[in-house]
Amino acid sequence: MNKRVVLSSFLGNTLEFYDYTLFGALSFLLAPLFFPSSNPLTSLFSSLTVFSMGLIARPLGGLLFGYIGDTKGRKKALALSMSCMSVASIMIAIVPTYNQIGILAPIILVCARLLQGISAGGEYNGAAILSLEHQEYHPGLISGILTASAAAGLLLAAIVGYVFSNPNFPDWAWRIPFLLGLLIGILGLYIRSKLSESPLFQSSTIKNESLPSVLEVFKSNRQAMMLTFFIGGQSSLVSYLLFISIPILLKSKLASLSAQFSFICNCTSLLTFSLLAIGTGFICKYFRLKKMMLTSCFLCPFSFLLA
Image 1: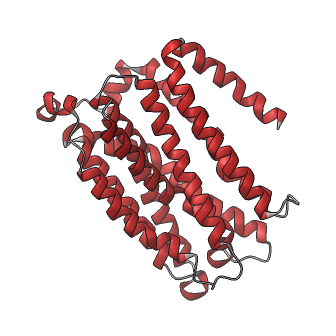
Image 2: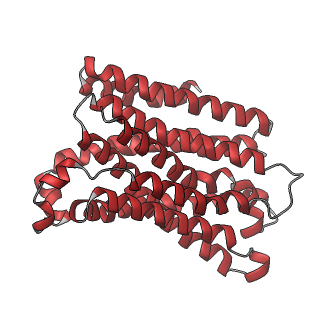
Image 3: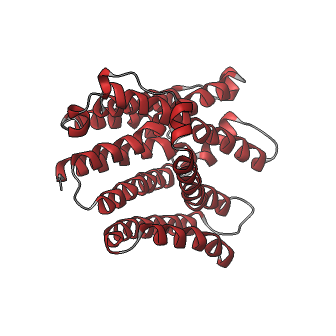
């Protein structure tokens, strides 16, 4: 296993997902500043709608950075996605509030979230491809480690969001975690600069060939792409429900739980998720992947019913 590549991908992915999910972790603070309303829940749901813009933009980012990765190299695609994420975080950090510039404030937020979504669309997949193409040893374990890195980014964002939600902090303190996006971007670019390009990309001639269109790829791989879409869609839905939507709702007036208790539950679930991702990735070498995936797909809905 190329430990350096896996570690670099883990750290880069963690930093990127911190930037990407920080907006959701700070939704309670951002809602009244950019979506003022007499009903706090209306403001909150407006803020979450802007957060969802990033999810809508992720498929576009996957297509864009996938193309860049195939033609210009995996490293360049990852460096560009990290740069875009940093720019979007700075936009959020410095944007004036609704009381200062009116409707232009939420419009800028939407643009920033779209840019973050496009960036995230190329980050996770690009890091996984680069890591897996560097070695063939235990791909399940490597995939599990990279899945855990996304959870680590969510955990970091949850911790920062909880700390800066302290009412004793000044009103502008929420901008500090987003300003850190610039430093995080520089650190991420440094980490990525130390990686070597994918051996598969270096040895291939794809960069000198004309790539097929998306429609051509879909026609020739229709079944595999549809299965991947629905399986990946289910896991993403469960992840965002567990680690973004439910914690926010638990802190709202819809629940009587304290912010501290909600924070502890969220951190515990993220740590559990990370450990299970690595563990499942390790043992998948000894089981049939199809059975493992089908089992997880069937168990997910029942877990929500039990909750």
